[in-house]
Length: 286
Length: 284
Image (cartoon, rainbow over all chains, first blue to last red):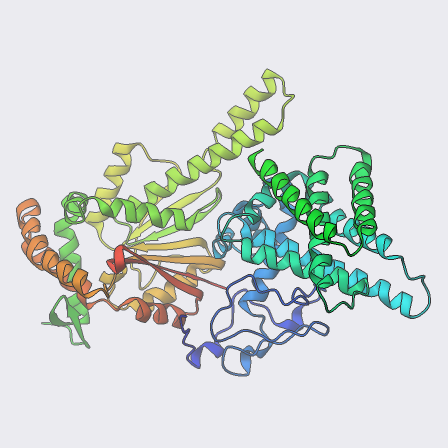
């Protein structure tokens, strides 16, 4: 762990690009409701972020002057968010990040802060999608609690949640296979797996899953299998509005429901997961 | 008379600031013509790999404006031009592949148009304090056929003749060791970089492994000055070179100095166990 040393002088130097939090007039989605830190946290100044609330003020770098400035991490998030609009054209690459940096008024060299294969961009996108999904599910739950909506049966709930999440991929669908293969790189697997499992966790949480026994594992494994296989089907789906994909999803969820708490459930979960991995391997090799 | 000033080191000697600048100028004046040959023989050609690694780390995209300080004979500048050129070629190829239904006429026209912009508006400015080194650099450029996107400026790293917020990347390869006031050079680097711009420094650094360190010392002090005498006829300059490496701050200290100048995300990468290190920082 490298210690960064911050002499008091730094607090007085006006940052060239890190902005005061008070200047921000853009509302940005908070990215850490799932507490994912896929950037390696810089030693010594990790800002505390609450899941719900106003933009946190940065208090790491000595002195009251810098309390209002955003941190490097926040700037990086802004750059990655800006880079997303260039992904359809440039793919998940350092070029997209460079273009994103340019729109924020920064030099294209700022893309050098990130890995040259675009990993961080993809992980950022996945994290943002997961956050969006969480918010959506939370909103729905509130409506149900207020009595303004009917509580959905479990299979419909799962189906809608997975569909909503997969629909977020549609603008980037052409380059998504590339993203999947990068997420499968050994270096990225811990982070991507983390993001995947917490998303699945979230969905089950809002579905009302209260299990504390072995069911907890099987439910998550089953849903992970459903999600992964549907995602792969979506990559190769050319039907209008992806209706083939949604039909596939419906069937898979129905299968899962009819299986019940038997040993066969565990077995077919294993099969589904294996199928998912095989499909992933095929996609990657293509 | 000698100009009075604070005591500084020149290799293992102690001199004033002004004396140091003069002596270093003379060193490079005398080695300029044999600079490249000596680099190859001293490092057994490995310096080329170090510079290539620097370029890969920079990963410049077309449209980048590079300032190469103490760039003397142009090694970094030429590599930059080559790199940006090949990235641009790939970009153009990808663009053409995208448009599958063009007529031959359209393909021909787009090829013509993009041909004229083979560097994609990238530019490199080579700045050096030493006229002789710049002269050698310009001759090399002519000889190797580099002309577009390249300019040569005489200037002092401690006081750069450029406006604020101009460049995307600032590099100084094997030059910062020879700067008398490193803190001023770092401040100038910060000044001329655009917000978001990157500072990259390639320099000899400290080897922590004790066995390797002894071998390295042996090689440095016994072999290199001899090579200097045999190949370039100049023992003393190469003695200075080797001593100046020992006097230069180690990795962590240089990192702290870069942070003091205002750079963020400062980091370094050791090459060959610390014989050489690349420091990187961003103006954020």
